[in-house]
Image (cartoon, rainbow, N blue to C red):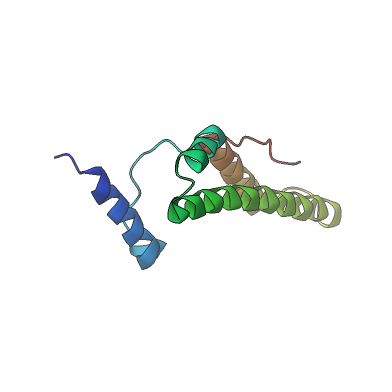
Length: 111
């Protein structure tokens, strides 16, 4: 059974409002590239809701880069103070790399 596109949007809203613990997973989709976002910005310049969503996407991508920077600092301090690797930081590094690759904002995680 095919689910209309609007239904997926409704599911995404439900996912956001009910919290990740009891929410349905999002359907597979291709994330918008920076070029898509720029095109949408021009195409929907009079639609404040679309522009706000575009700004939110870009904001979240910048936050991910900041999180990776903090992760790298913690990893460096951990290695200097304790030595070795902290598994949670390696897992976070992998998650950040996966997300940046998926979204097309690929920045190699800092060492």
